[in-house]
Length: 290
Figure 1: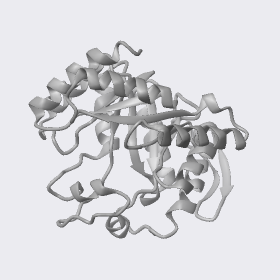
Figure 2 (figure 1 turned 90 degrees about the vertical axis):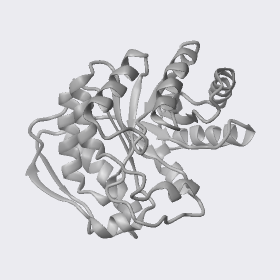
Figure 3 (figure 1 turned 180 degrees about the vertical axis):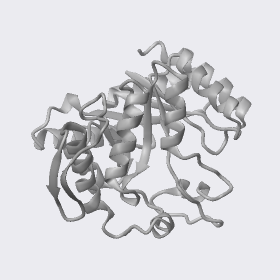
């Protein structure tokens, strides 16, 4: 099992030295990867969604660093930890530009990038970025195809519903060809998409119970039905520091492992001092499962 560390966007002080020390400490503590979430702009008032209770936190009171820039910074101050956007809201961006940025990040990190992507839920961001919120799911699939083609072909001619490329290519090309693409998904249609297209599924089920085990088993079957090897598509879920109990963490890790999870990302919460303490404590626990 592999363990990642969530970058606490809203809680970490806006000081480059603190950000540097947090990321380097995570690498030194043995975390396999660093997950950096994405929100370009946030509203003044919360816009809660029935299917995403945490949406109330995504206001300007909970600031977010820009993930691709932050990952480039992380690439320059680390040497081993995998760097992952988790997740970049792909349809509110131009796919060709994202492919270029990802290729550059892969070079700067010496092949340590994983591009986590999703379709998002926050329509004000789409409005501000002049992108269509309504067609985001259909456009998302084409975007992934375009990115992978650009990462694996020196020159490309392509015409889809939203993209047209005429005998062109990225220069420079990434080290990984293609860069691994993880898909964040909550709804059934998005989960099915992750089974068809993702190198990994960024999941977020609440508890490791029989229902979760069934969902993961169904996901593995969907991967197989898509003509892919089920064990080649990874599954990640989260453990939050709110328990703050190492023995509870051990039990939860084992339960998720029994459900078929391959990756766990630790999401520290609280004051920054509490985050640092919990991150260190969890790194000790996770070593029993590596």
